[in-house]
Length: 614
Image (cartoon, rainbow, N blue to C red):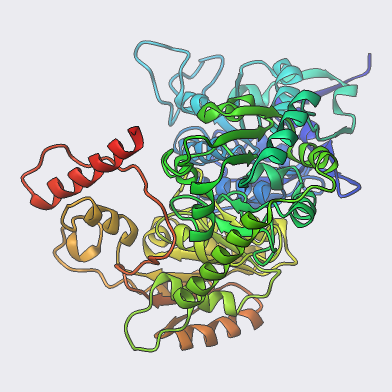
């Protein structure tokens, strides 16, 4: 047997550089590159191996470990999980900085390969610099934090373990059911050790996406249920996009008249003006979709885990005789809410369904009712996003309207946390798949700018517009410098409401006083006046302040013509939010309180809980 004598680090990088996938009829490297912040735990060995492989597997330098992992995750999300990236850090804070990103990828079922440095397997110099010692277990390191937020975890304490660990990691990343982060904690002395690896281990391998097929009986039952329904509703989740099923869904909805609502992850599965599109659903849903859901006699989830924002904390599907069917590749998700499960790939299920429903159409009364709902919702969106007629601070919705008017249909809007995701879910009009990129499974502040960078690397031909609040901007902004350094142009709109406006509104709605959310209501000796323009400019971005919606629109036009990243800052009202649409969300209110406002909020909360029970 032919062998190659390589260090474990060299072998790992050589193997990873030779993993390919089929994408759009071509064979392309599965890993588009490696994000690396080097330290003593990975620079000497993984750094050396990456340098030698830099033509086949480019390495990108970032400014924050969590942010670079966000960029890698956003890259995979934008490419529908068909390709991914690698992130490597040193032992210690570099590694633990990535744990939040790992959790984000885990919740959203997105692939990323994490390779943090680890302690010495030999324990010869134990404890090493940055080592976290467990007083009761000598086998634990800081990297054990990754275990609950990884789909696959391994600690490499021998070079030959790569022969099993690397293929297992690849299988996890490419598994449509188990997809998520894989973590290989790489002991730093093991990275340096040599081993005679089989040469065939490094041969080019092409992985092909699996599309699990549903049982024929389940397809038949689903088709029969739809045919029997007088008021059916489809809910498109992220699984529709990951399966590449948007065209099949569009055609099915067009020929049958089946109405479609969209989750955060599924938004863009249908063009916003498709005749069957009802818009967003749930807590941040359109009135059209939510009214349809509340009166539907059959609800079919397509690739959605029916998270509480989607189901209105399990109050949205109100008819006692309503039937719920869940189509999902994962049995874990398909059986949620007591649903009848159809376990299979969304594209194959929808295609089979189209064949079964050929010649059938939704009852005319249901189509007419939904058309009326959509017409009403369209007017509500137009009103919410119209430019203000006064000099008052604009709402988030009015800023969204300005950004929408100045973005072409091929642009990608990126956001993550706070009040903006809810407003965007309701109001953003997505014309093409991939044009709406929201991280709302983990709702992670700080994802926005780093995520925008990952989207731009994945889709360099598309304009990428990042919308971010001042709170998220302050939490993580360093990848502005990375975007400038890499020549990856972003347009970043910073909405400054001087605090955490979304949570302040939630705090007030549950009866409490504004406290510790808006800057003015937090403890301070001097109220900060953050100059976001100067800060962004210091990182190399083109930066300016817009003092009105008209000025914002002019700035967006300039940003579109610019050759590198632009940051536009606009002050907004922290209290205004779109009143149209939406649904109840279960946020527990204190059972006892000295505040009358809290007691009143608790009474309203209990009324809603009792209403649900009946």
